[in-house]
Length: 373
Image 1: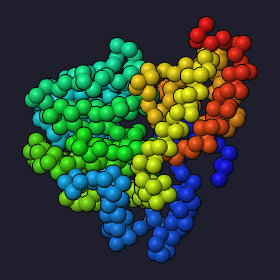
Image 2 (image 1 turned 45 degrees about the horizontal axis):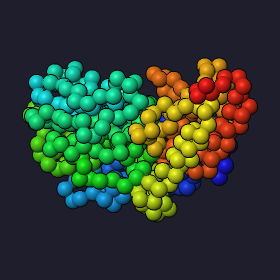
Image 3 (image 1 turned 30 degrees about the vertical axis):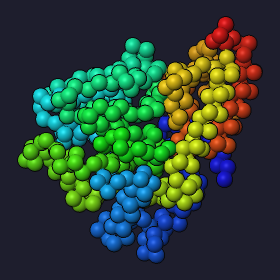
Image 4 (image 1 turned 120 degrees about the horizontal axis):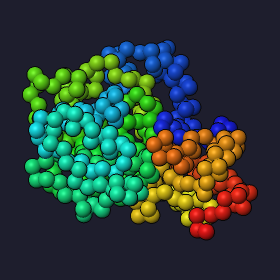
C-alpha cells in the first residue's frame, strides 16, 4: 500500500504494512476477548500467552540454544547502559568498552559514574568514527568482567561485520541490527536491542542472555534493586511488573512477519543487503554525494552521506520533504544526511529515493560542483 510518505527515520521508523494491517483488528478485539490488546490485564491468560509466545518466537528466529534466556524489558538501550555494570560488576572492577561513536560513548559514561575501572580498549575516534576498529585490535584485559561494544552505529553509519572472540564475556548493543540478518549466538554472551528500529515500536527492549551470565551476577541482592536485576525478570517471565504489553504485541507481530512472510533471518538478510547495495552503489557512482563511512565499515541499516555545500544540504531536505521522503536529516551531533533502511523499509522505497537523489543531483550539479573537483 502506498501511504504517500516514505519513512527513513532512524527510529521509531517504518513498520511493514502487513503488521499495521493486523494491528488494526487487534486494537479492537484481541483473540476474541472483545477488548483491544492494550486494554487487557498483564495477568490475563491472553497476555501471559503473548509474553511466552513472543519469547518462543525470539528463540526460533534467532536460533537460540536452550541455555539462553529471553527478556522483554523497558527503558530502552539507555537503561541497559546502567543495568549492565550494575549486574555484572562491582565498584572498582575492570570493565572494557569499544568506542565507535555517539551511543558507545553514552554506554561508557555510565560505568564511569558508578566507579568502575573502565578501559576503552579500542576506538575509532581518531578518524571521527568513520570506521569501526579491526576486530583483531580489540584486546580486553584478562580480568575484565565483560567487553561491551555497539555492533551498528546509527549516527555514524558504521557496522561490525564480525564480533571479537577474546575469552572475555561479550555484551553487544545490537539495537539497530538485531533481527536484520542471521544471528550467531556463539559470538556473544548477552545482546540487547530496543525494538523501535527493526522489531517493533518504542517501549520494549529485547535482551537475550546466557544463563551463565545470570548465575555470575556479581552484586549482592541486597545492593541491587529487584527491578534492575536481570534475574528478577528471568524468574518472572518478563512479567515482574506491568510490562509494555502493546509494544510487546507489535514485536510479536514483527517476529511472525519475519518467520512467516519473509522466511526467516537468512532471507531477510538478503533483502536488507540488497537495499543497502542499491543506495551505496548509487552514492559511489555519483560524485555529487559522498558517503561518510569508510567502505569496509559501512552499515547495512544506516547510510550516512553528505552534499557539496550547506545550501545544497538544506535544499535537498526541503525538496525531499515535498516529494514525500521523511527522516533523511543526519543526527544532530554530526549533521549530513542519513537514510535508515530498517526491516520495515521496502526495496521499492529505496529505489524511489535513489531516483529522487539522481534527479536532484542532475538539477543542482552546477550549483555546488562535486566532492571530486
